[in-house]
Amino acid sequence: MEHSCEAYWTKAEGLARDAICTMGLGAKRLTDAAKRQLEIADLRAGVNVGLRELGELLYATHTGTPTDSELLLEKMREIDELKARLRDLEGEPIIHLICPRCGHEVQPEDVYCRDCGEKL
Image (cartoon, rainbow, N blue to C red):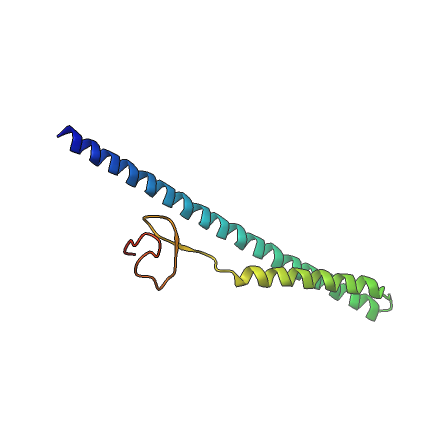
């Protein structure tokens, strides 16, 4: 009887370790997604600030205080870089689905994990 109890404990310990690893992977992915959302918000704010500054420079030129064209070009390049990074980040998937058994990434349409075969 002791032998079979030990086997159950060994299996239970393994399942507990798997569950902890899976939860850890899920938490990391959620944390990464939250960090990315914060970066997106920062980039959007940077674009808005850049556009506002560019508008002020253009308006100053309109009202008789000419703005150096190199300064205008530099400001536009900064905005272009921010928008390019923003497009890259917004194009990435936000949350990855993971298998509850093995922690590998699965697709929304998967019925079984492609790695371990667990029914999802």
